[in-house]
Image (cartoon, rainbow, N blue to C red):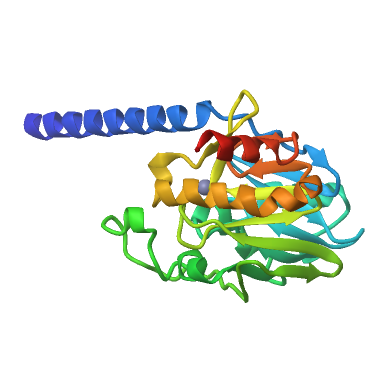
Length: 259
Ligand SMILES: [Zn+2]
């Protein structure tokens, strides 16, 4: 009996140490970022904070919206609350555009069964659980998760969702199929970049990025591609940090600093 207690004590201690290590890791990872402001409104875009990640409601018209990412919560409670404040329900969401296939961005898709679900081709299997992120492939096995991507997206295309125009850019690095979207003057970066507390743009956090060098190259390329239409970009929105409202400048400065 005494031995059992001793073993339990050691196991308990180990779990405690692991939990503390995880907490420190998460703190270090997310503490340098500009905080997410729940309910922040830009022109036709609303920020919804879902724990450590944000999703964005993008207006199509008075009665319908698109989402950029669907948050970590499978029931999408925060998004549904934000819609309810406008007198809208889940059926108002016509399209969900995933910046990539990670669960903390895709889990909420299940709460909007009527929406078209879109992602770049190379992240569809990840979003649907048929593939495990390369970083974790030794830790977990693929398991379909009930999410279905109904519309594959392609690099360089412009979607017209009931009059809402969305430009699609491939920015591989965080995952193979990571995308950035430009809609209503906001450049949505997903996890390909982070906004820092001093208003700058940094590359995606190395800890969670499959290929950091490719991510940085994607950001440089995106800066180049958007340079001719810089005036269209009013703000940059990253998924795990707050919105930068200095137009394209933070991305241009990042690219200049990489030279
Ligand atoms: Zn994420």
